[in-house]
Figure 1 (spheres, rainbow, N blue to C red):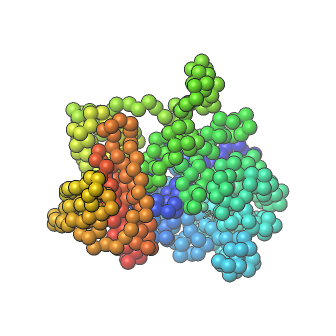
Figure 2 (cartoon, helix red, strand yellow; figure 1 turned 90 degrees about the vertical axis):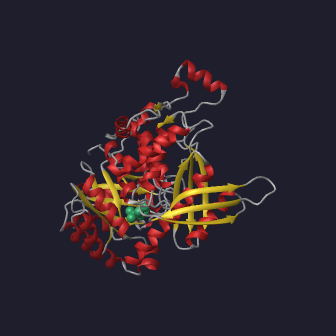
Figure 3 (tube, protein in one colour; figure 1 turned 135 degrees about the vertical axis):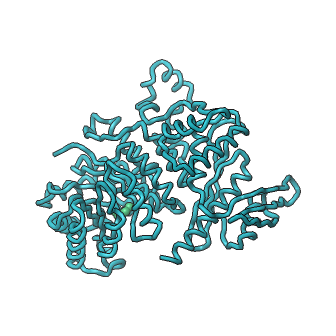
Length: 508
Ligand code: KIV
Ligand code: ZN
């Protein structure tokens, strides 16, 4: 059996299903370009029928990102497949990913369908997908809780119908490494045409076993692993790409497989995804957390200094972690700035480049030393800006101990200015309340996180907020050297996104 593992990244689809992690088309494009540079094999760019935004993002990724397979998700319905075909029409290598649940609990309570009907629907959907593209993946949703004999029957039938990949999802993160190994082994023994398709796995992390389950599955014969950057995704997330890859590569003595991925791109993409989604990476997270390569205990430091391998099983350089480097100063020109952006992996439109360059000059005036992480914050703020949305003109805050904070906020939209003032429980609350009064929007701040992009007293403050109007949960992000301004901008960014999504859904 071929020992090459296909890396299928679903950060833009399952990853986006993390609460509050919605991304706009421009943000998805930047992530997709980074994924392609990193040499993942397949990018699942979205679920085209889910919304107009998803459709546009899949279309843009399919048109722009070449050299990698671009995949669109569809239920086993012709209208979903039609929509995905339309979105993928300019892809160099398009893939349709069709799914249908197969477990008893899903059949009885969600689909209200008998097993025969499931089989027929899955086969028809694969045949229909196959009439458009050769590359068709089928996923029996909740496979790990499906009766193995029925799972084998479905797998065999969809391969006969033309599926080139059959993905076995552990949809609810319920399985364990031994059990999953046995399930994949069972399929290899009981599906007679199994060698005509690639067997894939898609593990959720509800019990913290997604990476372990994926590793067990490849030992049993699975040759595609579905994963996301930083492990983001529905509920507790998906198999973390960086953890799976580095476990397999570091323990090549056990996992002797070929994985053609450039691991030095791991840290940069982790930072990008974290900044774009507003989902910060925990300090002690394996591979990409801030502490992943830090040695605190004296005895560890002593051993490490004598020989790095005493306490280091892989190097920070192998995952693309570099010393923070001073990159550009206030006298750097636009050309040097553009070149540096390209080196960081960003190809920006003229408009975005100009806006980011201006933000860089403003920052360089306030902050002596500008680092890569600062630049990524600026880019992300620019990518996340909602075109035509409200913008902060100025904010004045009065705060202190024993007084009620007051914020006076002036915002603008389409050349018109609006202002109001509000008191609040703190300065951030006062600014958000004033913004709500001006726009007349009813929403609550559900989550608020402040993080500094680099070290130092003059570091940029990055603020990620999640707001909700009861129906949607939307993330807003912004950065500024003043954390109150960053907070107000982040809140306004979330409000702009919420207004956009409501408008879009009115049209859908
Ligand atoms: O978790 C799951 O089952 C999925 C499928 C659509 C593959 O995301
Ligand atoms: Zn999933």
